[in-house]
Amino acid sequence: MKEVKILDKTFRLYKNEEEIATSISTIANSINSDYEGKSPLFLGVLNGCFLFAADLMKKVNLSCEISFVKVASYKGMKSTGEVNQLIGLDRSLEGRDVIIVEDIVDTGNTIETIVDLLKKAGCNSIKIATFLLKPEAYNKDIPVDYVAMEIPNAFVVGYGLDYDGFGRNLNELFVLKD
Ligand code: IMP
Image 1 (cartoon, helix red, strand yellow):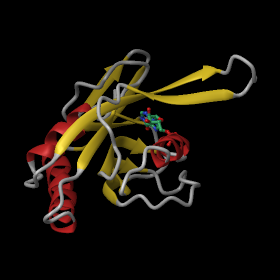
Image 2 (cartoon, rainbow, N blue to C red):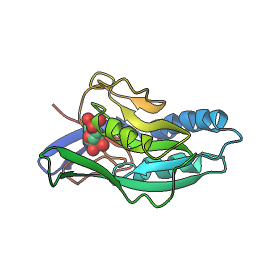
Image 3 (spheres, rainbow, N blue to C red):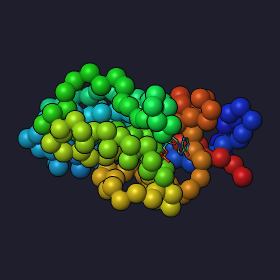
Image 4 (cartoon, rainbow, N blue to C red):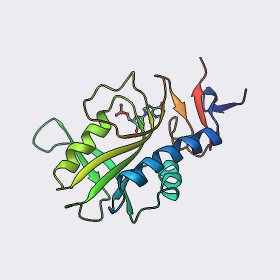
């Protein structure tokens, strides 16, 4: 079985290129039929989404746009609570059908934050497309509309996902060896 060493950890091959491509084609087909006649705006969440977003977009045959954001968290000046902000948003989302493009939805904290921030932007609709979902860890009520692959609650790297910054460039998905 193919293995990779990243920093201090060893990972074994979990999903190969063909399995990844097939799973992405399936959700691209769903998006193509659900958004027929519409002009959605895909909103990729960096850094992890970059490979998934590229491969997904190549299979989307709609008239559409793509833009990328990052989620920044900082301590408020007056309060001690965390304030979240989307950075890099370069166009109005007013009236748009937005599809958030994520690498992975784990507990759902990140996606919940993003959806809350987008709700203030006057979108016509907001849906979520994710490469991976960990159903056992997900604890939010927001529906995750397009899921390429559901995976168990294990740590994975590759295809955009990192371990401490490394491994994003692997074109297959690897899981932590126990
Ligand atoms: P959530 O907010 O708990 O849903 O976590 C989302 C973020 O956690 C992702 O965008 C990733 O950055 C990170 N993450 C969660 N699980 C994994 C994993 O298995 N591998 C790499 N990053 C992960």
